Image (cartoon, helix red, strand yellow):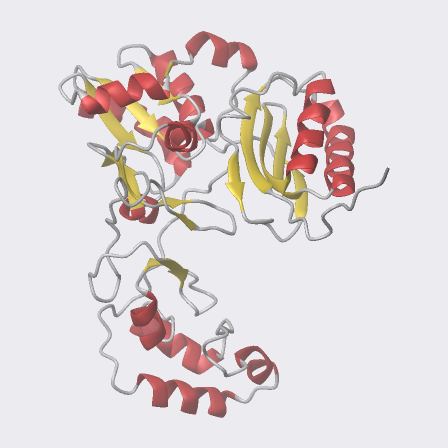
Amino acid sequence: MSSQLNARHKPKYELLTFYKFVDIPESELDSLAQEHLDFCRDIGLKGRVYLGTEGISSTVTGNLGQCRAYRLYLEKSKYFRDIPDIDTKATPVDGHEFPRMSVKIRNEIVTLGVKVTADQVKKYKKEITPEEFKKIIDEDKSDEYLILDMRNDYEYRLGHFKNAIPAGTVNFREVPKLLEQYGKQAEWKKIIWYCTGGIRCEKAAVLGNQLGGTEFYSIQGGVVKYVNEYNDGNWLGNLYTFDGRVSTQVGDETTHTTIGKCLYTDELTDNCENCRYAPCNARLIVTEKAYKKHLGFCSRECYEGARSTGFVKNMSWDKLDYKTLAREWHLGEIQKHLDSKLAKVEWRHEKSQKEDVIVEC
């Protein structure tokens, strides 16, 4: 008996994002990283993995079979078995969201300028489950908790939890110095802070709770786990992700709320782009129409910089090949094109809109 298999089968893909604080001897990092890279490349995963003496932080994409093989690989490792939330934070995607696979050794798997051990994490970590956090928002317990968004400013403006306020950090390395300030800001309240996948805030909560006094809590699994479990409208806007999706919708037509405002027009939008002047590359919340009207430059400064250097990223909707023209030093042709397209544009911002960035892990 024979059967015809479906030759037109389209594999389903998922994105795995996880971390684990576990003590790894420095002497084993090189061999462990090489083994990890070889395995991931062999099975066809793409993404980025950070290894260090603190443990592992990983975000990868692959089809369901590849991701299943990766889970089995982790379970057989003496360091990476029993990864918390690896399944509840898994997200369906249309295909690979990274161009390649990389494994890097880092001094800290999430950079705060201070290392933590697995014992410190176990002793000082305080976290609340998504279910507990939902109850805090639904019952509006703002008199008991201060909710801080620890991500980049543009991430907050694109989307955030109800009642959350931006922590106001310029760089995540500042957090250890600001812990006392956050405690004063909270007064007698408990602090809940969150980030995309949970790793930064778990480590920061450990550092904060070592000081005593104010209680610092992280959300188990971060934003990703919460929005995977609840479609309740408690998250406003889109979620910024550091992969090919960039701006990811949260909720459906009944629960999604757009809160991002266009850099040029203040229109509501969930769309994210980057400034096309390569030395700037600022993350921009913009409508597609306004972005194209400004040829992708966030400011007059970036337009003038592009005009004088030719350092402009090519885009399919702008037919000029800036890269080739700049390499061959045909600036006159670039200048003529930019001037003709932008002659009637009024620049809302004179200076580059690039922000100091908190690196996402």
